[in-house]
Length: 376
Image 1: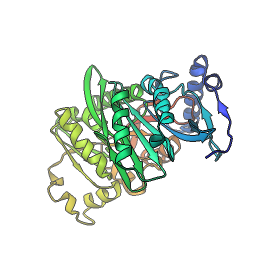
Image 2: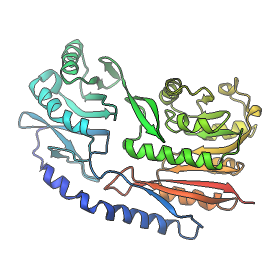
Image 3: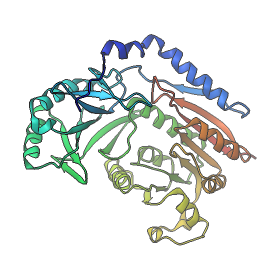
Image 4: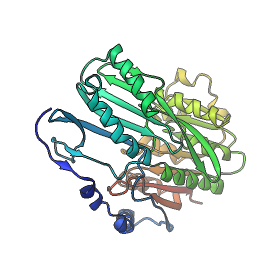
């Protein structure tokens, strides 16, 4: 790529994200959320804010080659041509520290820079960093040798990717430590798996969800969790239940979840690799699944269902499944599909707690949570 493109300076980026405007921006999100939920009987909405800068522990950048050098670049929504950046104020401290040194090393080595297409950073509050370099060419032993030296120089982990190829210099994960209600939890976060990018807000989400379960879950009852991912919520919520049955469709996430339960001494969780639709079919007795061969569904005394679905929300079958439970804890990444789902759930369940979590400051995206209990 040699076509000239524009450069966006740190000052220009920071101007659009002035910390003095953060409270107003969050209030706008809250107002929009309230307007969207109008007509439902909502309790007071708990608001969990973010720091206005330095909050993002994951980041991905295009690499733009211009005037014989590689540059970090990003794309505006709807535009194909990227713009060069010289900093990224919302990135966490470790990413900010690594960006210049990594780019300098890339520009000093044709082995690293040739046909380099993008760079992904995955960092943690605990100080670990994993960098993935993505190429439009096959990688060889020479690349691996140079990457090993760079990994040692920057004290990070490095992965190289190209089409149908993944070279792991040492390991493909970081280990994060999150503090939730005074307890430290460890999480393996794999390079290609989903993790929450705003760890401090994630801690607040976990704390709120744990408080909801402590408040609403009956003693000596069990939890069904759909879409458990790497066990982000599961590891924290398991303490409130006798047994937890969790489902997740991604093999990578299932393996990470099992690792994370072991890291945190959680031994009352069983994970099955199934979609929510498949599990609903199994629970309804509509079809058998070999993946459930070692799970005795009849042994569970479910009181609570916890769901954290993708942006599309819950399908009709899963909504009907949720309505069988006395307590529903719902974390949403899309207020619009949450509202659509609540229109169904509201006929059988009352909303007793609600919250918003500003995982993504300076965007329209908003995480939210509701706790529902069956109407008497």
